[in-house]
Image (cartoon, rainbow, N blue to C red; front, side):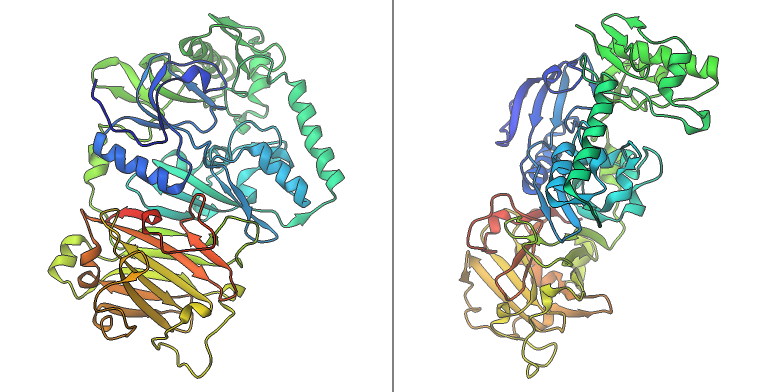
Amino acid sequence: MREFILPSFFESNVPLRERGYYAIGGTARFLARPESITDLSALLFWNREHRLPLAIMGKGSNIIFSDEDFPGIVLSLEGMERISWLSEEELLCEAGADNTLIAEELLKSGRSGGEWLYRLPGQIGSTVRMNARCFGGEVSAITAGILTLSLDGRLSWKPPEEVFHGYKHTALMENPEIVVAVVLRFPTEKAECEIRRQMYEHKTERDKKHHFDYPSCGSTFKNNYEAGRSSGRIFEELGFKGMVEGGAMVSLHHANFIYNRGEATAADVLRLAGRMRSAALERASVELDLEVQCIGRFDRTLLELCGVRCRADRSDPGKAWAGLLYSPDDIESETALPCFPVLLVEGRLVGYSFHDRELPAGGFAAVEQLRSLEDGVSDPEAPFLRWTTLRTESALFACKPPLSLPGGSFVEGLWQYGVSELFIGQGGAGEAYLEFEMTPEGHWVALRFEARRRRAKGYEALSAEPWISGLTMVNEKDRFGLEFSYALLEPFIADSRVSLQCCASSGRGEYGLFPWWNNPSSPADFHQPDKFFRVTLS
């Protein structure tokens, strides 16, 4: 077997039966547990080189792993679990945050609208990915925005209407993107005793269904609302309560639950699920979709019987793969030419230390690649990257330079006011980097460093002169920023990569980051090029 130099957050030879709620599955060659966006990006860079199958598991509360060993990487986001209030109403949750912990945070803050999340198994990233719902609540109704990471390493901010497509269906289920974080909105305040009462009513209802009597993932099939009754009621009418297949059994209390009553295999569960689905179609004329997600290589007939989307295994036509984010066979998507401009990073600025309401809400930054590397080389003076910040009435930019400084002017000491900042580094290849600061009124400053806080030779004295030919101002109704030529950036492009870091300072000692860092140093210090977010240019 090929030997690898592994990232620090990798584990080898991990039994998947110990990771999923079903207590079923073979052994994963690698389990990756990143703790930050930077770690997650590093994983994708690593796998781009080594080309192993990649799947994401969340908490394992809605997954059945194959009985076979998994020959690649299973990604768990349990280490990315931080939550922070951006404002009185908006709560930022990393994808690995447990649903129950979010509900408990809402209880503590007196905010209603998420009581139904209490004791809902799983993490918020998976909850959003499948548009989970229960007890009359649905995650689409409380989501303000979603941050995703594509397999080619681009961070994108998605509004709810772009993601949610109805009952337990989202665009994310069709695209190989990783949910990194979610902003949830809770405008309604309620007395703590009332929130607590509703939470415990939901807990009691779950206990009545005997959800946790045996290893299980809860509901096996989604409801089909055209049927006029729940999937559980349909299977009860068809006599499936207590039905057995090997070590798998339909619950005596809820006919849409399949238990692992002891030593069940994934094949046992899928055979039983296949019988249930076929009976619903043939005897009740209702087509049902499997809610439990399958990951790994299975018998192809079983997957098709359960209606699971899969791809044939090239080495064995009787087998098929399900649940892969990436497969080494994904050649077509890797070679597809991007359509410019391409968003490299886009998202909300978050308080430097990830504390509640640490930064005035409203900061939103983006960096786009405007043309290909090839076009950049052929026309090096044309704009190549575009950095913009949302023009907002947020208190983030309320501290303004004196009126005596005309808009658009080069200003030393701009950090004393409310500014948006962009750092551009060498993609992990060195310590040199650029720093740009800008206000909504167009005041700006630029610096070049050869190492951390050490200004490059010829750039010791601040001046606009070295920059004018490589910069273009962006002054739009809703955004402000700068465009950079390829010639200006070329010294910082290494192996088609650069590193980017969006920041902000209010001028009052409040600081923000996007992407945010894990365990940032104190006091706030943006000059840490090793923490900048690496991106690949096309």
